[in-house]
Image (cartoon, rainbow over all chains, first blue to last red; front, side):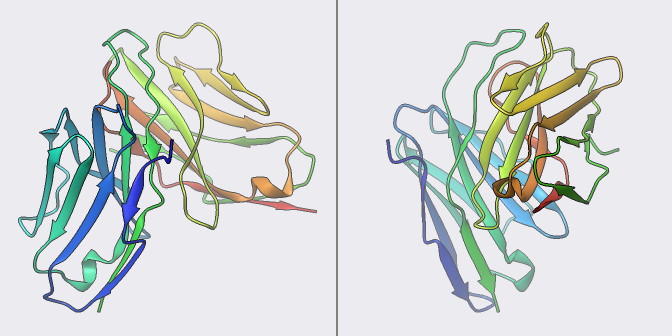
Length: 119
Length: 115
């Protein structure tokens, strides 16, 4: 399996522009997660999907951020308009569906990340 | 209050020595999972080890082991016989509840292995 695929790997844009980050999860995985990593705030969960449905978007910083998962093999994270403080590494991760047990284990497989720079 | 606390921003360790990276967590949920990830300078996130809250034994994966002290709410990562390639950022993370929810990460520890 190719693992989680993210594109682009690097994105440089100017303030006010729209940015779209893309993610292809591992085939067969039912969960997809978007994380953001910055020096100031560390790694934060932005949103996650189960079977293409958004489950928790409480980590999405503001209305400028939106995420979609139109099908099981593709998700996008869009920032419109972008601001310099959005500069970060954005990770996508996926995991399998597991039954809820007392110690359910499900590894999250991370993509290589997209390094976004907003000038 | 932080849910995951890693108190060591940076550590220097001699090659071949054992390393313990500290992690304490805070949750009122009786069911949770604890994860350790490694992030080398290249940036990818590499899963190392997992411990479930109901697991009776400490998790081990090759040179990695997890010292799980539930009453103290600590989940320290132990790396035996450290190698130069172990130099990286190490993150402790928690998932609360059973199932597949998102992870809450600590700030990380920057480990540098010296020859």
